Length: 78
Image 1: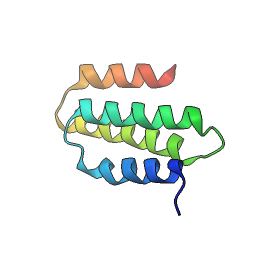
Image 2 (image 1 turned 45 degrees about the vertical axis):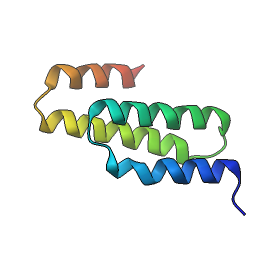
Image 3 (image 1 turned 30 degrees about the vertical axis):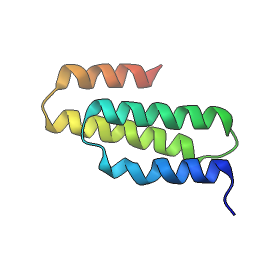
């Protein structure tokens, strides 16, 4: 039987590759950050929050949206 954390994290992980826009990756990264706040002893939500942010950056690079890319980098440095 899965815990609530396991169900939630599994559901979110399965959606990572299906994201199509920078906004969707931002929302997903925020969801993982919220999970990480509740499950601070588990590395998975931190990893996937970072992964979603990296994927957002890759999408912005491919779209040549460098201004938005700089904003992502600035936010992550904080």
